[in-house]
Image (cartoon, rainbow, N blue to C red; front, top):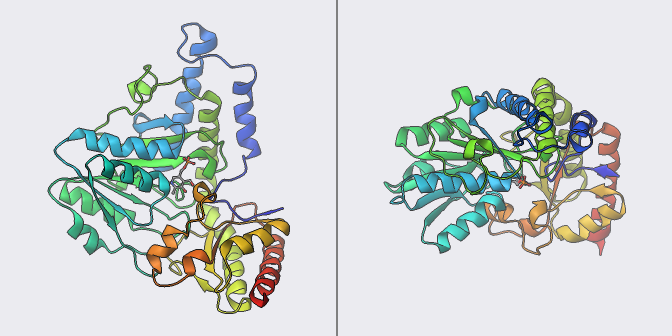
Length: 377
Ligand code: PLP
């Protein structure tokens, strides 16, 4: 198998598994218990919190562990909205992940006003359009750091500065950026930031929401006192330890990440653009994650190509894994290129640290062969 779908999920790193193992076997207590077998787990959770905080330049008290980035995203919007019930306006973009997009559709049905900012043909956002969209009743701006389908980057520092200047809370879905790009919250006035462990070599079913000091917070789950009352429910100790270890490794390896994956991504992209007739890239050439390429192969439906690639042992996708079972075209590529069929004829390839040049060469020839077959038929 050649796995080129790291934006959907990443393999659990062996070091992460080893760190988690004791908490799935011998140390299975409940951290809220009064006896040491349980309560000793509190310090384990705090150690993991420290690693997540260090990766992002946050303070440990700002980290709230969640069950997924979907939960983080939902919680952040609700927290910002609950701070001032008179503010009923949300600004987001047309290309957010469904964990923001579908939540804003839900909120719209409950009386909130939502502005979805457009992007240009390259997937880029215009700051002047954002500035113009902010209204006196805007409660929160929710924009992603890096797009999961195209890898295109939004200018998070500029957005954060603009929101701070205009007195509007800013939530950033940074799921695809964490561990791939340096993010330092010491110099980034983001109010809320979401991340997910399984995108950086950690386990599924655990994420975090960073709630910056001073940002309003209302728990989304009402239950026990866990997470200092900010997230009820018995902690997923093994998952949290896994996220902590993945964050620790990501921090150490971040400086080498782009240099490792970008040459491979560039080779895959340039070979496919050269060898599949009329193939085109979706997404800006440089304002992009180093591991992602999203290509349209005109005349070839995404599903047909993915099926042949699957038969050849290659894992890639047509956009977000969360929407793979729907037959909707990619809302991201459609927002970029509304007049073309690009959104139905695209494939996302996303590489990981362990991807090799031999895999890239094999993938190129499989895609060229499959595309040739489909174009002829
Ligand atoms: N946001 C983005 C940008 C994502 O890519 C994903 C996962 O694909 C999510 C949110 C949701 O993350 P989780 O699977 O932890 O709910």
